[in-house]
Image (tube, rainbow, N blue to C red; front, top):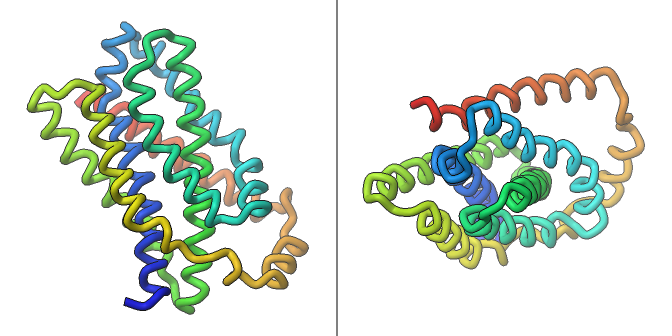
Amino acid sequence: MNKLSRSRIATASLFFIQGFSVVTWANRLPDIQRKFGFSDGELGLMLLLPPAAQLLMMAVSGNLVRRFGSTSIARIAALLLPMLLPVLAEVSTLPMLASAMFIFGMATNLSNIAANTQGLQVERLYEKSIMASFHGWWSIGGACAILIGMVLVRMGTSLRMNFLAAWIICLAIYGMNVWHLLSDEVSSPQHSKSVEEKTSLWSVPLMLFGLICFCSLGCEGSINNWITIYF
């Protein structure tokens, strides 16, 4: 297997880890609700914390990737995100839960920005559109989390053990793949600079695209967070 193929697999693993971690968390929301005695309204307010953190982290994540490179940031984020799952299982007070959920949202955004940047770099070298396949691996990671979660819930596995198992699975995938990520040197500095100069943060097309993304993520978040509560 050539180096570029290995880099593609490594990048796909970033999306898998992110999807697996986020869906594992969503799978056990009923347990979180029972543990803290939340009403649906109170749970809804708590669930605003991760997307709020993601929103605040958008500009920060982009600047971090630009300054330190997507490779380093992707490695850190892919390690941090699943590591927060056991933390979420162990928190026992409302302030601790709120803090952990907020940090989980920050890590999700950081992972998302870095993984997509890596994906764009790999796609550029392939000279064909392959980003959809990377996003597909997010869905595969989520599907695997659902299947494993179903089995563990039927076995009566505790929230702590479920999240610990998810962390170990992600850690194994991380260890096998993350060192094959594409180096940031493959990106053309001139290309990046020209794009940065031509792109306006407040352009109408960009604002409209952001609105579409906001609405899409709102729908996705509603489904992911509430489907386990009501079904």
